[in-house]
Amino acid sequence: MQTLTRDFKIAPSILAADFARLGEEVDAVLEAGADMIHFDVMDNHYVPNLSFGPMVCEALRKYGVTAPIDVHLMVEPVDALIEQFVQAGASYITFHPEASRHVDRSLRLIKEGGCKAGLVLNPGSSLDLVRPVLDELDMLLLMSVNPGFGGQTFIPYTLDKLAQARELIDRSGKPIRLEVDGGVNLDTIGSTVLAGADTFVAGSAIFGAPDYRQAVADLRAKIQAAHEQASQ
Ligand code: DX5
Ligand code: ZN
Image (cartoon, rainbow, N blue to C red; front, top):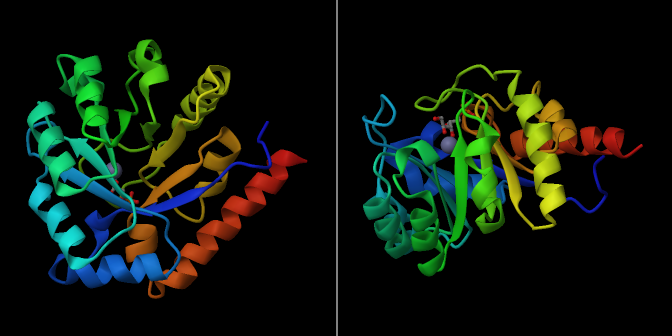
């Protein structure tokens, strides 16, 4: 059952932004009401695509972005980039446990750097990968598409895993965010709320919309409606 106090956050993925105007795009989604910026780092090794790295994160900070930057590492190995993203001004750093030989060490690197730490599970990866270190996490991110590209279709069986993750988190009693990433839009976001997500990555659903303010408001309305439905 959902609690009335759950604090929902919307995190637009800049993978879907116009890179030629990145600073303005980030300002625009934050002014439109987004809570944090989701920053997808791809290395053409862990995933078959290449995006941007710590220099771009640092550039956004220098440009004046003060909102939380939620760095999602789709890279292997992870430790060297964790250190660079700590320096670059990341707020959250999440990585895929399969991409680190020493998951606990990588989590510690993030926290010792003063950032919030999280793990990411692919659609085909089991929650068992995070159970041993759950208490160390500030965020658990469940992929609802296979990582590597924006604009893919939401994989419905993620909902079961979200519900199981919500149970694990509630049982732990820790304030761990439960984030969902991939294919989140007006048609799918409600079901993720019902399953227990509280943090929503949306790339094409926001940057692909003609009016960012309207897109964020519409997503928030769907979150609220699903939340009210779950609270009845
Ligand atoms: C996929 C990325 C996602 C992606 C989401 O590997 O992790 O953050 O940009 O894009 P949409 O919302 O378009 O599915
Ligand atoms: Zn992502």
